[in-house]
Image 1 (cartoon, rainbow, N blue to C red):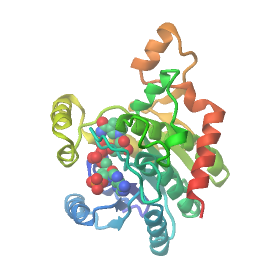
Image 2 (cartoon, helix red, strand yellow):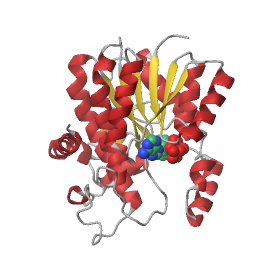
Image 3 (spheres, helix red, strand yellow):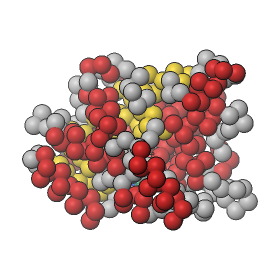
Image 4 (cartoon, rainbow, N blue to C red):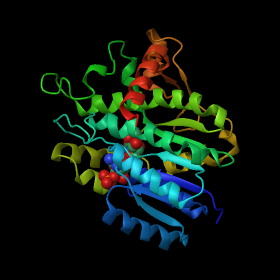
Amino acid sequence: MNGKIVIITGANSGIGKAAAFKFAAEGYRVIMACRNREISAAVQRELIETTKNNEVDLMELDVSSFDSIRNFCAAFKAKYPLLNILIHNAAYLNHGEKEYKLSPDHIELSFATNAFGPTLMTRLLADHLARSQDPRVLNACTTNIKNFFDPKRTIEFDNLRGELKDTRPYSTYKMYGDSKMALLMLTFKAAEEFKSRGIKVNAIQINRVKLSKETIKKMKSFWRVLAWAQNITNPLPAGMADNYFQITTSDEFKDITGQLINHEREIVKPASTEKGFTQLKNIFGSSSYPSYAANPVNVERIWSLSNLLTED
Ligand SMILES: NC(=O)c1ccc[n+]([C@@H]2O[C@H](COP(=O)([O-])OP(=O)(O)OC[C@H]3O[C@@H](n4cnc5c(N)ncnc54)[C@H](OP(=O)(O)O)[C@@H]3O)[C@@H](O)[C@H]2O)c1
């Protein structure tokens, strides 16, 4: 056991579970931060049995609820003296969902779970992170943000608290992509904010990974068939879990902060131009992200909204 502590949200399924397995196998003390105690306890037992690492802890967390995040962070701080690594892996995307949903804090559910919740949690754990030698935070982003190469695409800032939920058409994919774009911009700001305390904050651009059967079971029938079909060619979560591990532990990323890193562990750059042949390369490649994410007006807007919504 190496005594280092890692928190992984959504560690009961998919990439999060594979990452928990990897860290446990490498001798880390793993905190599984999960919302479903019964399902997650079975995964915890499986991890302990297969890795022979008894230091796999399970703590309750609903990332969509700010109260739950506050309770989790208070309980974690009372139990552990510091934190080495924080991985925001959990996310909300209910394939085929037609209904706009609000979190317990009356925030659109994808934004609460995928953007504002993780940002609040990083802030509440910053002191504990700063106590470790080489603290690192990793946010799970997605290639879905490439939709922002469309110059008309914007985050619906006017509809994040249900303002237009009954009148504006809702797409769960758009909200998911918007929330992950928000997460990327919040990653840039958090990296700046915590730089002086030595905390590195990066995001990983996940392209495609096999979905777990539990996740597929939750989908509506059309999406279930599509997901099974895509699963035939999609790679296993272990590869992406290995990326989580390398980015948060290896010397290669020791001094990297405020970056988006792709599935091949290359730094993704802001697009130099969004026209012609270069734009086709932007869209089909994985080496550049939309200029929307680098626009200081957008970044400041999401950062101040996040602070406003999550302040005590
Ligand atoms: N798989 C892909 O192809 C792909 C592509 C791009 C990005 N990603 C990103 O990769 C990450 C992992 O996805 P995955 O494919 O491994 O999906 P997954 O197997 O469905 O795992 C998602 C995890 O998040 C948890 N979760 C959701 N809402 C939560 C909440 N409110 N509080 C606590 N936990 C919550 C789920 O818990 P429950 O089991 O309780 O629901 C589950 O453990 C996500 O951030 C996703 O956006 C995945």
